[in-house]
Structure formats: C-alpha cells, structure tokens
Length: 145
Image (cartoon, rainbow, N blue to C red):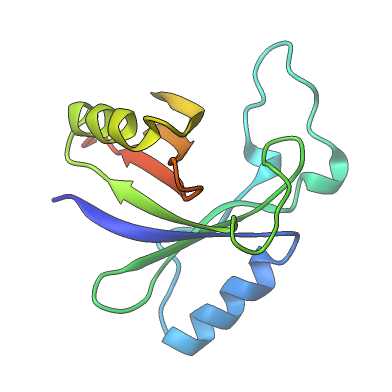
C-alpha cells in the first residue's frame, strides 16, 4: 500500500536529532542507521572524505499512526546547501515503478529533476525532485523481496 513519510536533513546533527526523536516517541529504528562510510561511491567517483564516514546516510524511525520519520546528514558533495526550508521533504512510497514514474514526471514538470529515478545500490528505485513551487520531494519504490 502506498504511503507518505517525512524526510529531514541536517548538517552533522542527524544522530543527535534522531536519538532525541527516538526518546520522545519511545520507538526503535526500523534498522541500524546507514552511514556514508557504507555507501558504494562507484568506479571512478571521488573517494569518500574521511570526515563523512560516520555521518548518517539514512535512518528511519516510526513515530505515530504508522508515519515514518526519515533522515540524513547533508554534505555538499551529495546535497544542495542546507538551509531551513529545504531540509524537509515529503517522501512518497509508491506501490509500483510505474506509479513512481508517473508521480515523478508530474511533480517535476516545471520544476527540477534533481536526481532521476533509478535503481539504487540499497535496492530501491529512487529519485529526488523540486516541484515548480520549490518543494523538494523524494519518490521511492521498494520492490518486494
């Protein structure tokens, strides 16, 4: 079933922020937070800076009513400069690749396709866009295993 979650981006504060939210909501992470050091940068890509290795690439925390709070640390190598206002993005979890493609095309029309939908190393079909009104969106389809 399709659902919506909220994605928060921080500058080197995701760990402490999510520890706080975990305490507030009394819930546990979906899985251990992924770190930038575990990311496959790909052949020919710039090596991961050492100071980034322990920063959070992705963390997921269920909060209320089945809502998932997700987050990561921004880094200029992978993200636009972080300012309050571009650090929160609705994330659409679709039921199919086709639904992901349709929503991505519709929301990015007149906006910016920042990261085209593609199969990612962590297993999802994922992309990022900014709509014509400056709102950032994440679109994700997770195939059944």
